[in-house]
Image 1 (cartoon, rainbow, N blue to C red):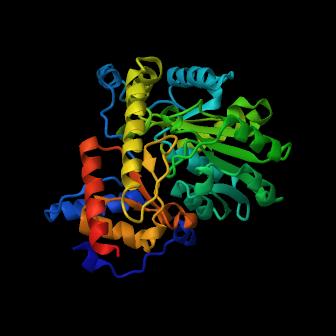
Image 2: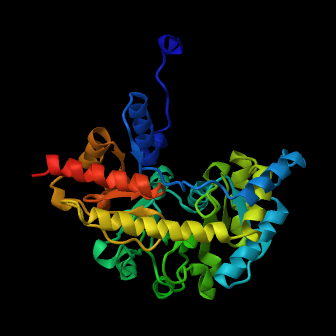
Amino acid sequence: MLQEAIRHQLPLAQRMGRLGTETAFEVLQRARALEKQGKSIIHLEIGEPDFDTPANIVNAGVNALRSGYTHYGPSAGLPELRQAIAGYVSRTRTIDVAPDEVVVVPGGKPIMFFAILALIDEGDEVIYPNPGFPIYESMINYVGGHAIPIRLSEERDFAMNVEDLTRLITAKTKLIILNSPQNPTGGILSQREVERVAEIIGDRNIFVMTDEIYSRLQFEGEPSSLLKIPAMRDRTILLDGFSKTYAMTGWRMGYGVMRPDLAAHITRLMTNSNSCTASFTQIAGIEALTGDQSAVDHMRAEFERRSRFFSDGLNKIKGFSCRMPKGAFYVFPNIVNTGMKSKPLADALLDEAGVAALSGTAFGSFGEGYLRFSVANSMENLAAALERIDNWTRVHLK
């Protein structure tokens, strides 16, 4: 056994101690271990559409494999996909985007990682939403930056109070991260709020990474985008991708849109890390963007229906209070009146009720007092989860 042969201490670099994780995968692992023991678990922890990738996209990927798209491609992405993305972003954000502004990467996270690596030096400040996607804070800390949280409050339906930026921006601020629709809360930013962000930044050389991975899954109104504001074009990095919109999580494909000189540096990071994104998946991506969009519309409507059903159900359970999200496929109930902290309650629901959810603190310190449930599951399983949670609270909450 290798473990018995290890005699030397692992000389990890100090920066590894600053690297966080995504708790959803840890909870998924625990839930599957319980299932192996024979326990019934309803999975509401992982942020992944439960739908299959649409058939037209699968067929395009299969045909690409058979046509020889099994070799290295350019680090920035296949020219034909970069052109398709440029056209798609131009249409959806009503701007002109060129292919040399696009970098294709294996998933959405590399854009977060590479943008922060490229822009943030030790001591630089990055303002990010909290509660928010945990990899933001993790990567800021990893590179030695200072993570400055901007609190998302339930009273505002978890929309960022952009006026808070006026007190958080300092001479050390290098990057601001926006996310709308938002993970984990389902909150959104209006276009007017995004415009106000631009006004507050003014002419300062502060970049903004706008994470719009859930933009096609917004339930009301038109999705906002900082890219629509001419004065911010040269300081905006758009993060988007295929995983959520087209149920392509396992295909690992996302992209960034940014000024060409920054795109060249992000491409160098791709060359040094992944070489390139798988070629056959990129051909499937072209079909996703240019082919039939009815599957996306169906998923959005279904996620809205499930979100409303689950939110309404939680509001009938002792100690839970839940606002209807405005996008994505998560609900983020307030559990303060249960008298329990978020992590112990999430653990109890998994171990004792067989419902896998995430503690709000998995998304930052301001997530205390909340849980996150993914509604990317069937209505039958969501109904069963509500029943299990209700039964558990009747027994354990006095």
